[in-house]
Image (cartoon, rainbow, N blue to C red; front, side, top):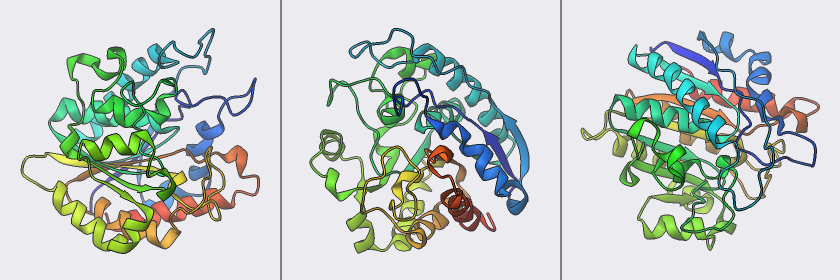
Length: 301
């Protein structure tokens, strides 16, 4: 069994405000999962907190590129430093977000160390980029594009390491079937980056697909791989506390079956958890469920 180290990355810099004058509440995700005993239940070690800059979009306007870009760049480097330290030591890094832009910290850390793959489990592919959209701005919906080198250089080429991930080393799961004609999905298909929708995942069988994906990422060409989990991949009947609770998502047992063979692979070096918003979960039931899912998936890692 490997040593699991829990690192808090409570950044909300990559999301648009849920309402004027407010900030996204996903920065409270780590605290909520800790309150549900995630560190104790996993027997994990403490990795501390990487404190993000203040959420302040200033005078940003549509057309200005990614908002919070300089803050995101600085935060990505600091988070990468923390992740790199633990992965280099042989630990399994469990990073509690935060919005999806925290995945850039993992991607940069692993790029420093070699060539790594990514299994992204998310209701949307987060592949918005200048090649498919004129609405660039929120890095939380663009992190996969940025990590593969698409977008402004102050985020895609940190430390001269662009791209952090190669297209052929990425796998995407859980995209809603309703997004089939979305420009992001169309571009991913054109690029032949494997993308599996909810219905396709069910047809394959989540456990079988997870196992096959782990094997495909255990190739000698890769030094390992990372798993990105966005809570919005779950159906809103069980996970309503996200910024985009779109219907027809995965059920808890399906998500566990998919994640288990991925995170239990000896070549998997970490997992980040994102987007759950405690502000949208006054009873705490969705947070308790998410904690249970992560603990169950990581048991015996």
